[in-house]
Image (cartoon, rainbow, N blue to C red; front, side, top):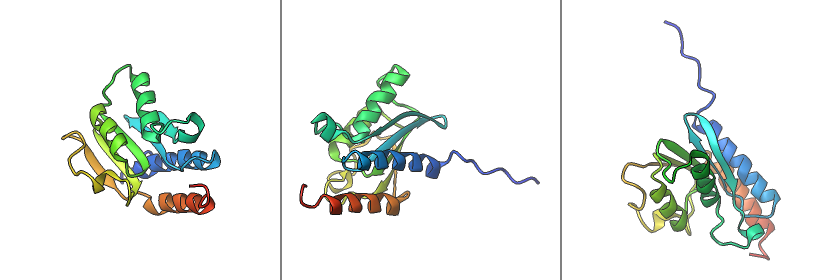
Length: 154
């Protein structure tokens, strides 16, 4: 029996793409959160936080990515999509993800202060699978570095 080749387009690969987006946010002096949305092992949206640049508290990575993915698909629902986010979604983003009806959400670091798990266990669409902790250490390290660097400003 022949071994099956490893799939290079796995969860870790896509979360690393989200981490690249978070690094772009960090470089732009934004809270380093990145997001990619995947359909059939293809990234259809990439985004990072833009709240400072746009002067918009709703310009979180997830919100930017949802808008981009919906435009790409020409549809408001993101069924059969997986969303990779470097930080657990806040309540606002969780609500938007619920309305988008994504199939799956994979996040890195847990947000102890503003993460949706601190508020609600059932905010997501009933069919959405939520998994946390993928590359959490890398995501957390980037966030800690950012907040340490910006301790006086934030």
